[in-house]
Image (cartoon, rainbow, N blue to C red):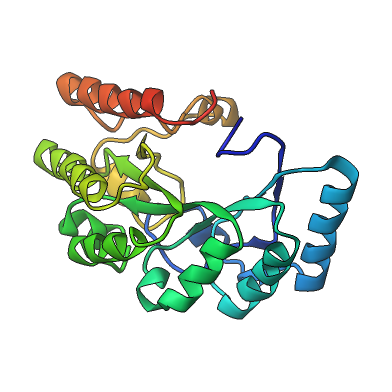
Length: 255
């Protein structure tokens, strides 16, 4: 069972993201945000249910909620059949402007889980990675989400270039604040920063001592929860690795 489903199917109805987070691969590709036609998405879900009797759909894409009208058409269908739950990823900042009426529609359409990239608990780091949101805003939106019966999962990243031990622990403190404010929170992911060539923060990682792997095979060995060679301090590297793996072990992530 994954994400609360016994028999779920992952589908991708959009690609890309128009936002410029400094660590994200989307800033390299420079592709426009594009979507699959809504009627085709609905037909695909209908076919999957009729053929395989799935009980869940995982919208496995970077940014499901960019076009609110598109989302409404899809969840109207899910609400109508009322036998399939779903999960999707989004930027949390969108939910500041989404109305309670819209959130009620998500809940009524059997939305089981929403996943957001928060990334950091330090406003300095959020500004560094161009996240375009503050810790204070995150806390308030989390309180808003707490009013609805939808599971929430947050992703965080530690080990950014120039990030201090104190700032890492500020991120962990934010996790506890969000948990205390919202009983629907699942255990979050705390990933380790990976420097992707071409991303805005990459050159800063190089300045901090990151040595790029010499081959594609060596790049393939870098994992989202293993420390990279940018972090020269052995104690800090060990602490980051320990924190990340502690959170992975508590999560519902299947390894």
